[in-house]
Length: 255
Ligand code: BEZ
Image (spheres, rainbow, N blue to C red):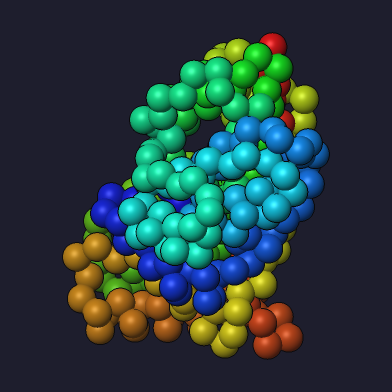
């Protein structure tokens, strides 16, 4: 997964409650149209499920992730595959991969130019970059409700977004700057069902903990309960929480 200030990832909770991340990643793997023997770099491989799927399809996969805990879990689950703790902004591969793949990760990377440069350098000539992540407006309702309820609780401070959610115009321009020929760019709504009655609460605990830095546990619980109440009319449908995801999907070729 991406860059969080500390390694705050919880791989077991991630696998138990957020398996939709790799389930949706399935359709991105299809965009890769893998050929047997191709060498693939999975950027932000998490606990390794999609890397394993690509390996099962005959690819030689290297998975990297900046979270030590995620990589430890990936190695435990798939000991036959290659996983390394590495941040995409610190990559040092040169002309090695037929494709670089990244699902639901690049919105954590606050230095997108550096990441794109490193991805470009990692690819062989003719190689492809296939990625999907949060685009402009992603989880806007959840973010607005969090900020509103934190403010209503009397906490007056600027809270920086932990995420990078660009428009396709912005991201395609960056891809072109580093040299990619962009062959696909999409920005689409992908309402994402969260598991169980506590789906929203779990999502916030897993992904939005940085909003609560310096806030005590009790107040945090109260704020989250207020966020649930505020969002119920728009994001709770037929007994299921549905997060307002908006994705960017891109494909670029190194020519
Ligand atoms: C996403 O996949 O869009 C996402 C996940 C966690 C936090 C923010 C966005």
